[in-house]
Amino acid sequence: MARLQLNFPEDQFYYSTPLTVRVTDINAANHLGNDSMISMISEARARFLFEFGVAETERDGTGIIVTDLATTYRAEAHARDQLLFEVGVMDFNKYGGDIIFRVTRPRDKKLIAMAKSGFVFYNYKTSQVVAMPEEFRSKFDRVNWVD
Image (cartoon, rainbow, N blue to C red; front, side):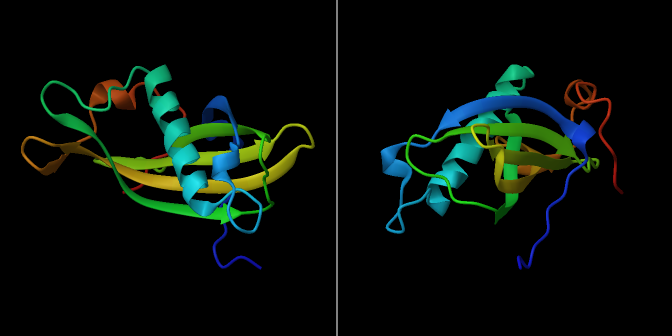
């Protein structure tokens, strides 16, 4: 049994994108490797942010920086599998929150992985955490807030 349990509210997913497991994503055990899953999660996050008009870094130097990543694996994926990455947000606070991921294989409806990535807004010019911009906050009206 997994030591970490990740369960997310259905209404917090805002976006989905397909990604294909490449031959180069396969490890010695002949399934999708952890390092490649992290890369795929990062790609899904970048697509999600782009879809919602969130720049990686604004002119003033403010951007999103990842603070942590938790992933639970539920099934193996193999070369050429088409995976669906559902992406959302939850647990907003003054400075950031969590980007959440559900990874499934639509062909057999198998849950492959769940993940969440903590983030904060960060000014790369001043090297300081900054408050979440209102423009970002307003894009996600269903998100819960934590203190």
